[in-house]
Length: 161
Image 1: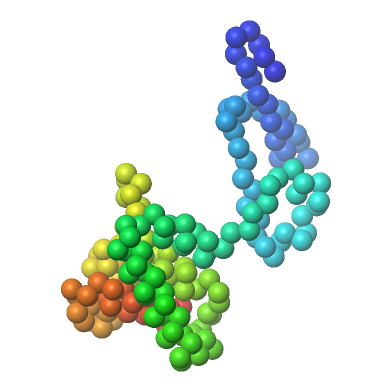
Image 2 (image 1 turned 180 degrees about the vertical axis):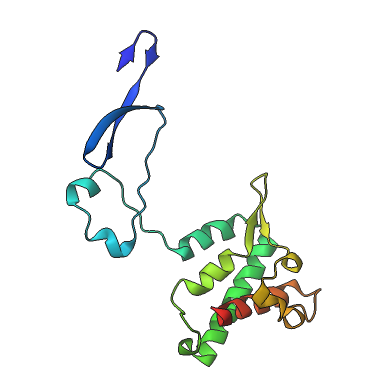
């Protein structure tokens, strides 16, 4: 709808039984987040109004991984490979609550974004929870070997879950 020189765009917003028209910015976009387990219960007419994408923790990890400097990407890929080998060797059943997202959730937690939207690995010397503080001497056994420290941090997180 246009009034004078200004163009107004409206969107219908429903809250409970009441629906109203609301002015929105011309670049307005709407994202609806739905759990996979609830997807089948959503009415088809509602779903047909949106593009659908299925994203996992692994997807978000891969997106952030690509934004790291190449040397940090290589380091995280090595950690991922070693952790997968460790899990396979000892058996997935021995990691409480382990699912397809567990490792990638832990790896994703290692990637930080600063105020300039630059991606980097976290400073692990400042990243100890009360649970990992007791393992600090194990995790940082050789503090100059960052890859080994991060690998041990990931293992300690996975064991504590």
